[in-house]
Image (cartoon, rainbow, N blue to C red):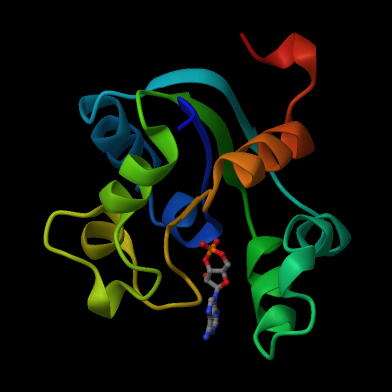
Length: 138
Ligand code: CMP
């Protein structure tokens, strides 16, 4: 069990003005921010980040969407961070997300689902390293 996870607030949520409300829900759930940036991915960078999904039928739509507008990337800390954060954000498809979860509150569809959360400690490390240098985290 690690105490850090990685998240992105995705372009659908930033463009609808949900960034502050999502961060508020994350902070109120007990996470502290260890690194954060507001940025925009190129289609190539989105492809590298989601390389594991390259052969999936939705890959093209995913990288187009993820490079369509600004995102917020962050490293978050809390006990049991990866597992608890996935509970906090809810199911990948917001139609299946539990009441009160971030995706239930803010997401519209499986493709445009407001937030990303790492699925393992290993990927949390890899994904945080993708966005942040040692100087940008504490
Ligand atoms: P995320 O948790 O960021 O990781 C991979 C993303 O791919 C996922 O959120 C969804 O937004 C997207 N995704 C997964 N399955 C589908 C699908 N069937 N159709 C479109 N997008 C998908």
